[in-house]
Image (cartoon, rainbow, N blue to C red; front, side):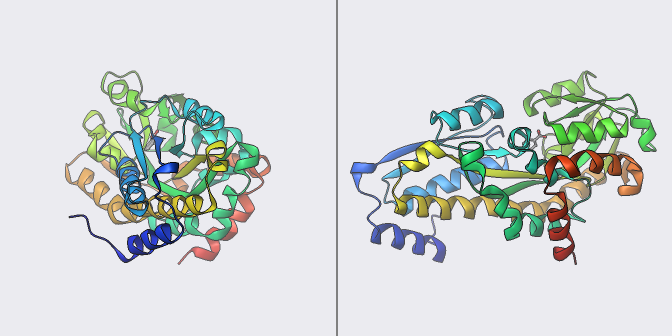
Length: 328
Ligand code: BEZ
């Protein structure tokens, strides 16, 4: 059922009052993601598009391109910079490769649990990290979402972090996570999401760094000897609009897009808070060996990571303060 929620009614009212919706400025925005169609991020993108169409009386719409149809995240970020792509929901991996300040969002054990991760990402000091993006990267950041906390799935038995030493361990291609697993002593192996299932199944990698949703839904655990519930890192997402495209929009269009996109990105945080622990419980319920570990498991690797990323990012102290203020 297509319900008009109070929020939609306000957005629709605002849009009509501001004159958005005339056919003259009609535009179909293209929004890219790397996640597959059933993924929470892709669903949020579709819902954002539906709300934008409703709020603008059909004048503006969003065509969603999931599953890397428009390229990988580096390519999509380039397209956003030139204006060839209008919008994207991206991991902050590629952004952190270009803006080291974002690397601190991957600080090991910044968040105590999934709800705490949500509070950190929603804090206005964290959201303020998006402000320099138009000047530094040529994109406008409209809010943070997330994909839960990171876990490890291993084909070989693991009892201590020393057992990870030398293992080819799949990572999302970005520097902060590479530095973490280098500090652990593993052999971090950058690999985009669509390649992970086969690589784990055929033994091309020994282990993977992954989130609970995909471990459960894509059944990565089936090819593992142990699932390590470590919750060692947040995995933020960011909603981006090309700064070039943004500059061509009216104030009213920007306000409507900003409000609706932020709403749906933020909604992904609620989804992971509601489901992350449930997915992990389901994995554990399969009887697959399942270990719960905390920061002690990783020993010195955490301080080694901080020694690199504290000076490099310049935002780690601020985020630690946010984490302390939002801890329960
Ligand atoms: C990954 O690279 O592990 C990943 C990317 C996007 C969403 C979830 C996971």
